[in-house]
Amino acid sequence: MSSRIQPVGNLTEYFKDALHGVLENQHVALEDQTEHYVVNLLTLFARSEALFESTADGLRLKPLVVMLTEALEARTREERERGLQRLGDVSLFIAGFFARGFARKLIDIDYHIAMGGCAYGTLARRLCASAPPQEAAARRGRVLGQVFAELAAKFQPMVDALNELSEAGYTHTCRDILRLYEQWLKTGSRRSYALLRRLGVEPAAQPGAALGALH
Image 1 (cartoon, helix red, strand yellow):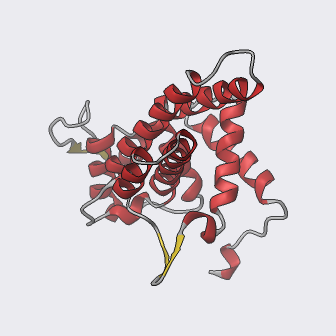
Image 2 (cartoon, rainbow, N blue to C red):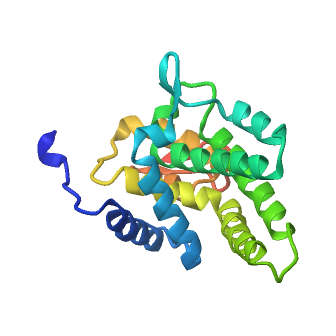
């Protein structure tokens, strides 16, 4: 296993190059500021203390529904916006990097995609309508609003791109077919569709349609 570990001198530069490569491969176009945001997100969450929260039982990841409730019930606008941002960020990272870990769990990847996309979309609308155009803070808010709006609109393709990034060097086998098919049916993931065809399966023409046939 140690021979597969790749030493990285600068984590931000690594994620910048790696993300740009998978986005091109997945044919996902992002604005520069959105791509920069995702690179910073990946760099931040590379540290477990940034992703998980400290509790009496150790580092834990707060359930998404709890994050959503806390964000919506926050006392101030700033706290609500931070809560929605955290929900979107965590949903994107977990769905992107731990998709295979959802197998046999009640809460699946489609739940994270729905929650994260909704959080980013709500946050985008709040930021874009928050203050007069002449204020510097408002201009920054609108730029961030555009970032979150793009992430909301492209949440599923972004998950596919991060799936590819997380599985660099992983060889899919026949054991993955059922799981990939389940992801295709639930999310319409173009990457799952392509991987299934590569593994010898012709998926249904549309997500949710009848099961495809083996070649």
